[in-house]
Image 1 (tube, rainbow, N blue to C red):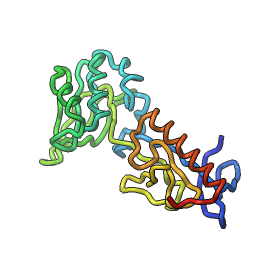
Image 2 (cartoon, rainbow, N blue to C red):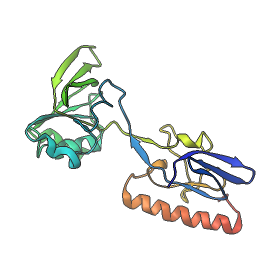
Image 3 (cartoon, rainbow, N blue to C red):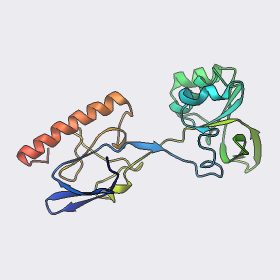
Image 4 (cartoon, rainbow, N blue to C red):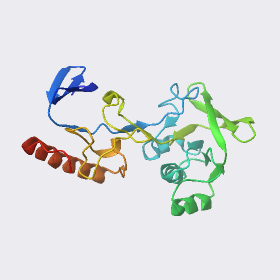
Length: 231
């Protein structure tokens, strides 16, 4: 159980460097997943666990009859906003654009829920409070006007960032930083495969990640047996 710090080519092998030493291998399956994208605003790190969350099912009950903010406009943001209506007194969804990216069914449910309101063209600029979150500072990205909003909780759904930094550009990535693979989970670099959320075009579901892993394992075994990589 070590943290991988780098992966490099070592002749015909791959060298995996970790905080517990280095290992060489012929085949490597990268299943390092993704992490929640941060906004980089004041107060974001300070209030993690004290009002900031990425999981309504986990933490929603801590905000019983309190106002909360949801940041984002995709499926996750709207779905979590709907879940929070079971607990919060009000749920305000902040979105930088004037339309949601969420699927039509979620948009319809979100717009019809009386506890949910939407603030369009709005960016979160700061999270403030003492022992916990008390308010947020927001900016209208069209007019540039700023305002304070009361909030006891902030749920951030600004997307996911794949954990690929340790690869150091060894394999091709897409515009989101996800690893590009073929249908057998193989990258363009012989011996390196990828599975799960870290892979481009991933469905980001547990069941599909497990399927990716099985596919990658079979492809790795075949490579170890016959050395062929090209389709």
